[in-house]
Length: 168
Image 1 (cartoon, rainbow, N blue to C red):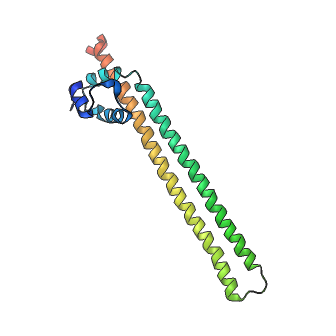
Image 2: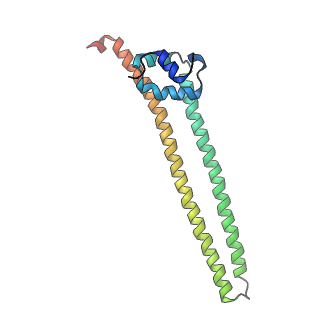
Image 3: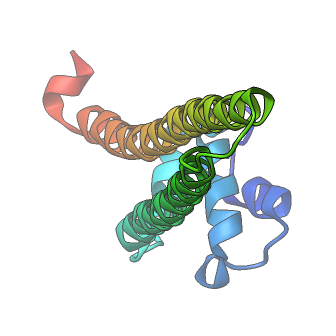
């Protein structure tokens, strides 16, 4: 175990008292928990009456950021698809004119095909983006769950040491 007492942990976090710990320092504290003596970690966490609230706020903030990103992405995708559709409509209108040479018709058809390829490419990029976002959310949610497991597991371990059954 790297940290044996509260003073070492406060020093590592650069704080003087637990009551004014910032969210950033709370996250650092959570990351340090595996390196702490279990009893010391539990004593510290008990001093945070808002520990659960902090964890819930962190998860809520991640969820809102994710929803905001997805919403902005959806609007952007709709705009791109609408723009490609408008370009194709213009090209089809030009193609419908009867006085075009074969070269002009060929050029317009190639442009219509190119917009289809570009739109497909943009859609593929978007799928990769969404896949990356999903992975980030899953990692963040996993970290929040792991933090809860560390907290609850540490508390259960401490309680089992105190119980008569724990000393068997």
